[in-house]
Length: 184
Image 1 (tube, rainbow, N blue to C red):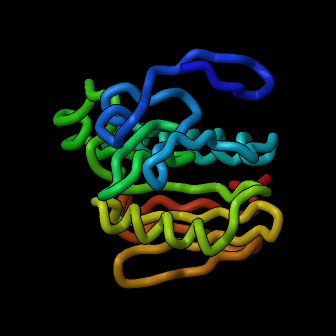
Image 2: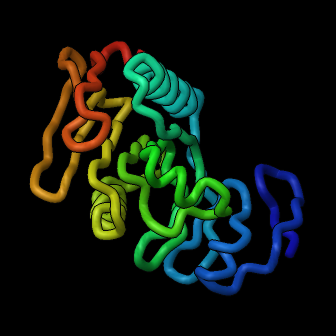
């Protein structure tokens, strides 16, 4: 199949189902509502936050010898979709079990979604619920322009603003970072 992606024509495998996506996930694409959708709206700020958070989580994991892996834009399956969280953490136990699969067959335990200018807030909160119903324990929704971060677990929603220090609630316990530093 040929598609236009960022003004380039690229060839991607034929994807007709969630199972096709799981087996061979095309870069920069998600399987949503039974169709292949390109992730769009990424900005320089978006990418910078991905890199910052990935660096901070990796540093924390290495310093505390926790194991596991941090990923960006990696595919996973929810109960009905094929998603690509912006940043995700996989525990050592899940790395041992799933390190060689093309798509994680569940949500990552810890996920970050960074709001792009094209994202709708309601859709992001629905995506967060979808992740939580599929194995995710904690998700961060980062709103760069308003400098807000929401941390959502199965039983709470916490909000953090620019002058706050945000911390993990269920996964990578003990990790914290100043919101200003993360969004710098």
